[in-house]
Image (cartoon, rainbow, N blue to C red):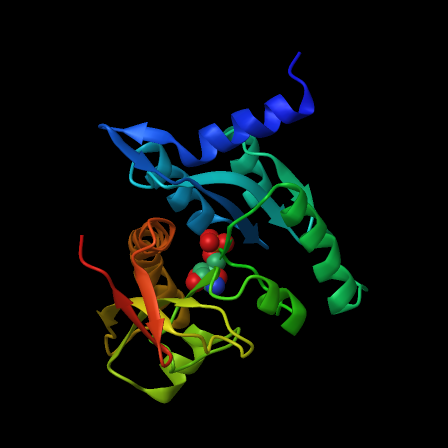
Length: 228
Ligand code: GRF
């Protein structure tokens, strides 16, 4: 049985001295926050299993409702999960409960994968430039919970998805990556959502990899990607 200080020592070795091809790489502990289906969560698990997230350890999932299918995905992949019910709870209390879990697990990066809650100012400040979100529109167009509906209603000819840093607004933070799709004449909210989702699954893990491998810089609200 290891003593506490030995555990801490071991933990640091694992965290900071993971070696790949003779090169020392830093591993970031990642928490996923989700509210429902969790297909974006799955895309991150799959990318990680394919070795496409060498600097990320998907450490845990937090859901804010116990019916979220994301829980099944966590179980199937042996990822610890926490249910923090948000109903009838003050935003700050809910966020404090989550912060406790995140602190306890030494989480570095937070990924909002279909997480349908707005985070408090205190929460966002605590993880400044360490929280990313996926949104099914070309931000800054059509932020909020009804992106597909509003896109169709506006009659625009293209849409897509955006990975962005989370700031104090709703879907307003610096844009990391986008992918576009054309909108057909007969497009519906449903067909548009089906068209955009696979693109979300493509760019979310790529953006997460750039973040965990410390390649993203933010300058005056704009994101740049550092070359290798
Ligand atoms: C996705 O369309 C995402 O862009 C939006 O919510 C949806 C979540 O889907 N924020 P899933 O739970 O990841 O399948």
